[in-house]
Image (tube, rainbow, N blue to C red; front, side):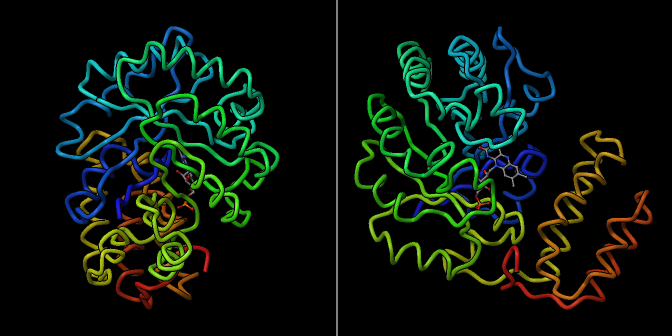
Length: 318
Ligand SMILES: Cc1cc2nc3c(=O)[nH]c(=O)nc-3n(C[C@H](O)[C@H](O)[C@H](O)COP(=O)(O)O)c2cc1C
């Protein structure tokens, strides 16, 4: 099974990916959180720097582009091709209101003709392979057959399907029946994404789709960074290992020049997920969240690691 790490804006930045790869090398591929080019295809310098090959070592990394302009997509893809990338991914799934209202992300799914024209322009000139990460629809998963008919007109290198519609945000139950239909009709390699948090989630997905070859993991993997290893039959995450990973990540963020206040914000964002591994730790978690400087944060994290129960089999969301 080919297992990839989902793009997670605010979480799986270049530093995270590097440190994750060092401690848990079992993911086959990482997708970088989206970059949003302007009309000329330019994107933020910090995004460009984070995608330089030297920031990403031997990681198989696919950058992702969020736009509804084929020209902007092609210009950004050209820049990424110059950096050495051979594939870029189109974001057709972001559910945020401000993105969707501009017909970007999942907003691309609301107008089949516009999507078709966009893909037509992209695939007629793309300098690299193009994959798509899509939801099953904007308002309903029943929209997917018509969307897939559009995708099937183009030589996508992969179609990653987050098996919800946009209205389901990150909460609705993934629509496995709609995914089954997609799998039957999709003309390119298809990847399943959505709520695979534990080995038993993965096992039930494999039972339901025995021929499925690709799965993308998001929240489950930021909750339990050893999830890729565990799904491959390796040992469970250990408390000391998580501690070492955490400490290395914090130090790497600081060494990369992130001001402590931003480094702390990033680490707290991650704790929103990792805290599920520490059941009944509300009081200790509160101290982590409330910490205002590095010293207080480090003390609070030490208290959590030494004082809270740890359950490596715990599931994101309980
Ligand atoms: C905080 C957060 C940030 C995300 N950022 C991105 C992103 O940059 N690009 C993208 O395609 N999806 C993004 N996603 C969606 C995930 O890649 C994934 O599709 C979603 O979480 C479902 O998978 P999961 O159930 O395994 O988490 C994000 C999700 C979350 C919760």
